Length: 211
Image 1 (cartoon, one colour):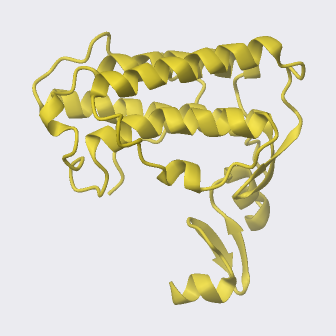
Image 2 (image 1 turned 90 degrees about the horizontal axis):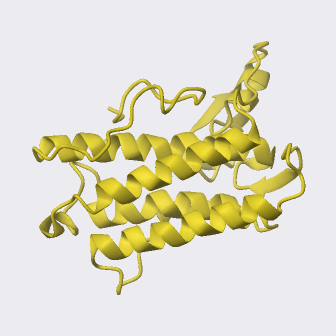
């Protein structure tokens, strides 16, 4: 913490060298900082990413309602986040993208937000997810910059919207992979499991959980 404060960094991860640092949320920024020549641009087009995000959100809806209600306010494994909070978080990640695309700033608080107190049932969280999916489709239908090259404001710097879309897709997708694993640990078969093919084109982490 003292090192981060000394650098002036307000969030993690960061990569530092002496007193210089770069936020680690963008692999392209890290590559530039280290002088590595590598193409980190998204593999999928914005239209393809919208399809991926909607597919991932649909899967999240399916899996969330499979969780037994009694685990709603129990922490997920050794994390300080409940099953209900993690379920809400997946759709909040997508909302952050939409607010950002509409001219707002993507601040870190989006990822720390908790579900409203009256959203206690997994079915209610899934309904919230349905609203987010509707908003995603309405936004894309009316969005004029189909290449999404415009820059948007994020807590890790000014970034092309296309890059933020890819980040949103794999972020939400990683949590959906976690949902499937959690259900399997409860001896519940995930309804229509997602496969590696479903995540193709996204820079998914190798592991489902960090160590």
